[in-house]
Length: 446
Ligand code: NDP
Ligand code: 2IT
Image (cartoon, rainbow, N blue to C red; front, side):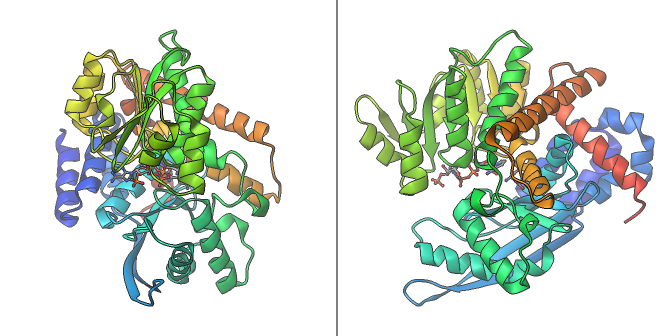
């Protein structure tokens, strides 16, 4: 790595000990930036790299709540307001027991460049808690969300910071969070959160947007090789919001999706995943994919503890969590004839896995481009809230499609410009970074 980048990376490692996922996300972006610094020495002169790696504000707070047995529980809440060069901080909230500052900072850092790529006026932020929603009653979820918002409310606002969902935070949680914000502030400030219910300020297509967008981005990558989704054999990992809608859109475009997974294992369904049944089990009953295999019967197989990437496919869409696909998985997929990978999740492929895909000539769509449809549709929700309007499904999906095609084309053009044709990692990192860096330069040393 270049000495300018290496010295900043060392500062990041030293100042943020133990935050491995954050270090990984910084290294991934930096790996693309040498030609940018050569072309724009003014960025290094103004210490843009050092500044962009230091969040503008980091909030860590106690979240006390009472469980159904009357026991007091204490969790740790986070909101990292990373960069506001392009607009109010924007990014999801994750409730998962693995959450700590390093996870929230990796996600917030990614979000800066992802949001820039969408072309919408949104900065980057992320938050969450080390709360495990699994097995908790509806009442416990509500009390947790209310306690979380009792601190968070003072830091957010439609012109300041606009949270949304991520792992463990969906429509139900956004409802409880919004209710508490409204109660404390006495303001019906629709634009303070996105991912709201459609009857009270939410946008149509927001629930589908991340999964749909990932597939639309993949479709554009396939198009550059005169291929389509029709007839592809697809592996999707995860069984949550992103996975379910990635499965639905892949199927609508003629692909056969044969897998989904959760943290206990994966399912292989050679007839194609029954997405309605999966949605019923995951979103209504809040069950597990082992229930799916049981209910679907026939030749459907549930493999406990196994890796979903053991299944031979032509398209892989990792939609569960970070570092879920490593170099061994990548090598195996390449050997069995993989054509394309797109990251529905944030940083699901390790950097070595991504290198293997690139070396093998597999189309590779990095998360900050491929999963940007979710946050882009959140920005469309903010637009609807600001104009007190509600768009149709068709119109909103058309906007999402235009945005995903735009992100694809911008990444491809930037990769060409910097001499790396077909490298969407280089395209996404450079295109996102330059936009934010230009705005930071214009706004002075802040
Ligand atoms: P959900 O909570 O709806 O679903 C998460 C899924 O991933 C579940 O099937 C879960 O299984 C699995 N999973 C989570 N953590 C782990 C883990 N440590 N090991 C194995 N499996 C795991 O979340 P989303 O679908 O919203 O998010 C999935 C990914 O997409 C995340 O990386 C998120 O950051 C990213 N993303 C989400 C966006 C959105 O709009 N929601 C937008 C852009 C990216 P289990 O139930 O067993 O934990
Ligand atoms: O990672 C992401 O982009 C999200 N979880 C969505 C963020 C948002 O503000 O919609």
